Length: 245
Image (cartoon, rainbow, N blue to C red; front, side):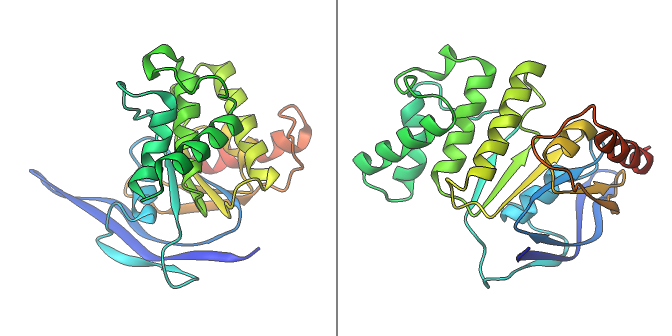
């Protein structure tokens, strides 16, 4: 695997009325071209770490070193789809590209392409309020993919979906990741679901409760698609639970 970035001695604290709250405590981690899942309890700083990697938040100490010498292009899939309600699905995707200086026609053609990839062909002229939660999250994913990210960051993208919709989207994310139809070199996803982490990840980084440190790193050397009922899957599940309990 090729090294993409290195997190070095990273810590993050916030100021509050009661004093300083340390959220992340001296994390170091190398990230390769892989599907990496960050697993930990609620409030441990998983999302904060993701935002720091993306460059939208700053660490209190430590740094991130990118192998190319500069940050890669990131795509971000949030837990709640932040779609603009008064414009169409197509426009919600294309607007990101237009803001990057891409001409209108080219931006809309690219938006159609990525809507097709996430299974939303025919919904280009629909408004967000007309979509189900799962379909809105597909638009969110299409928008993130449309910028052709080298690293896709996902912050608990399935946690607010019904189980069947979430399972379908997990399978589609894997299909996109394995198909090489995008220039993605890595996916970094945050979750608090052990099952989801094992189903998706090449590696699982397990964080402690706040202030978070890396408790363990688990390699998931299972072929895809993964069978949750297989002895191998259950063995890794038992191992991960032994680390988080």
